[in-house]
Image 1 (cartoon, one colour):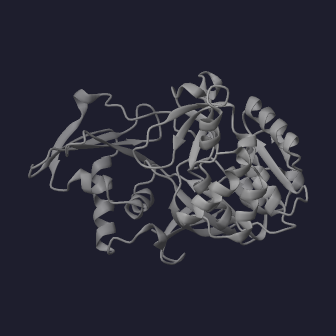
Image 2 (cartoon, rainbow, N blue to C red; image 1 turned 60 degrees about the horizontal axis):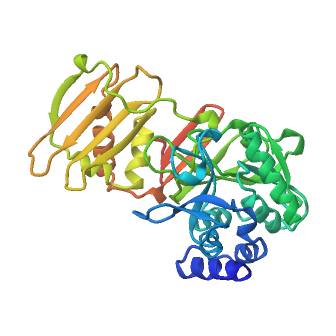
Image 3 (spheres, rainbow, N blue to C red; image 1 turned 90 degrees about the vertical axis):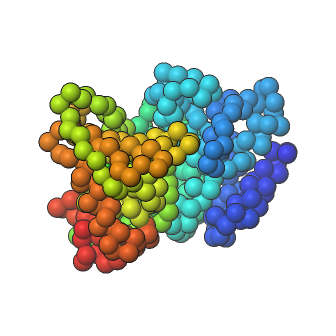
Length: 383
């Protein structure tokens, strides 16, 4: 593939997969070549289940690097906050150029129009910021904030080399850019558990915020909010979106069976695999009914599953585990702490079943001065 052909190839692929349907977003993808924002050497993570990551190095294999730049894959530009070489694929990614299919989905939800004032939270490579600037009519009305200084400098350099009018800033994007407010559109490009109040306050009445919302499960959700002007925002969920967490909202602890000698054991007839594999609708219900819980499942690939739960509150918080062995009539449960997290999650899952197993699209969020409320079908039906 030649670099000059890359944008056309990418757009054709995204349209064939059904993820790119908006002509204005299509034009932006053609006008802002992605390879200009891709590191010359980086770790490529294809956006499809089970696909293995690999290194792409423009100096070693220019053709393979070009193909990676115009594939539906995220490419790491930082790992472990800069402590690990991102091209090795080791450690945890802490900044990347997002997969084009996910970017297209968010841009279509955001619906940027010429003349809009736009805030991006999380500049990363600068590619999405340049796309936003194109959609806004090249008016210089895009502000993009990046928390990592080194990443911010590199993005500003890439944007300047491309000739974009984006104002790239170093700082905490969760605080917004009050001196440039109000904004018509706000695009958060890092996973958040709670929408920062400052972003709602700096969005114009009728304005839109999109973000990857990740309340505690292994998957995030595409959230689209509309701001009403009285400090309130309400909106709905539109599919899966897994992003790296906003630094100020990182969950510091992971599941750990501490104080195991004081844990309680019991059994359940509910298959933990059913809970783990129930999908995004069940995950939203659990987030609503079991606030503060984080969870993930571990599978051996042969039918055994462990659902691991913990309270995000602290390193000595509550935890639970429920294990499935194929063919078992009941499943062992171990729980520790002030909360009985398996009991709470089991009750939430069965309540979701009693509602007819609604999918993710029937849930929404409302945010106001009293906090974040999750609702089903109607903002008046708060869970």
